[in-house]
Image 1 (cartoon, one colour):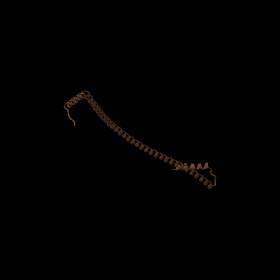
Image 2 (cartoon, rainbow, N blue to C red; image 1 turned 60 degrees about the vertical axis):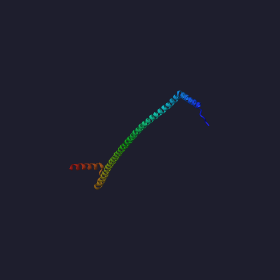
Image 3 (cartoon, helix red, strand yellow; image 1 turned 90 degrees about the horizontal axis):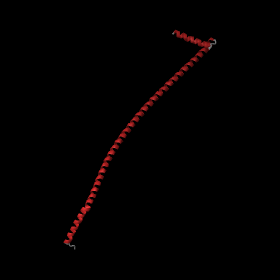
Length: 162
């Protein structure tokens, strides 16, 4: 079994205290310095991480504001484009109505000209038929110039009576 000797016990305690003093003077300060240095680095890293998080949140908020502004701008552009398209549509409809009215007016004018030409042609045919009938009834050849003079005199006389 194990026996304790008092001399050995004293020398063990003396050695322990001597090693402890040497370590206290030589190693304790560097160990504490290393621990403090590590603690400071950890605190600095935590502070930097916190600053980075705050900066990231700040940037995120700015980006969200920019995104919201961009969305509003896009909505405004869409609204403006719709208004422009609606105005263009109204302008095109107005132009189409104006063009249709011009075509209608041109058609009326053409019809009126055609009617006038038909009336002139009809008058000429009636005049020719009257000339021919008059020649047959009278048995005298009536030339066109004489017939035209008779018609003109009749029209002039008719105008004076009214």
